[in-house]
Image 1 (cartoon, rainbow, N blue to C red):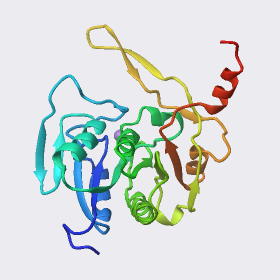
Image 2 (image 1 turned 180 degrees about the vertical axis):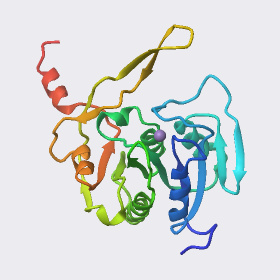
Image 3 (image 1 turned 135 degrees about the horizontal axis):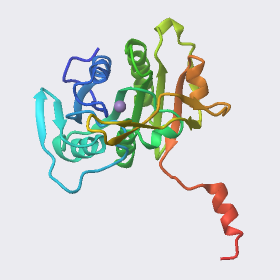
Length: 254
Ligand code: MN
């Protein structure tokens, strides 16, 4: 194990906030691979997506050696971390997580956790997002193990250009995990997404996000893998072009 403060610089962030247990679990294992810096939001910013704060200043607080909180989004944290707070240090790798909740299928478009890895990728730094597939009773031990081995592998091999890894780990005991599957992005089915209620003064309010989440059957998908207690690793690229559609559209008479 590298002594604390030695080795390549690894930046850890998340969208659950700097005080989330998922960050602690990740830092604990990653310090085996290098010097771990944390730059994370000062509060939960789940579903912040890839938003960047441009309309007001950002404040940074140093909470402990190499641990910083920012009153911004996960994307702000990566950008500010790499280009500001840690400028001059060569960040070798960014790991975002361990998120308290899945980032599977279409949900990754909302995800602050995945977006932090997107920002890292845009900055040319190999980036990994790690999420725990549950809504409660989080158990980070297996996910931390997976994060360590995936990070180690990426440090050895690098990543293909323009690509991040979206890792989702079932919330089960280590021995119940059946292995790793390399997967494609699946399809969520959203039911009862809007909850409508009345406040104590009789006015309606709405809450986005119903409880019953299903998925379409997509063979080889991230959702299928975690349902079967496999770790899912999906390579995500930032080129959003739909090449099949491009071929179709080129045949149109424009
Ligand atoms: Mn989150």
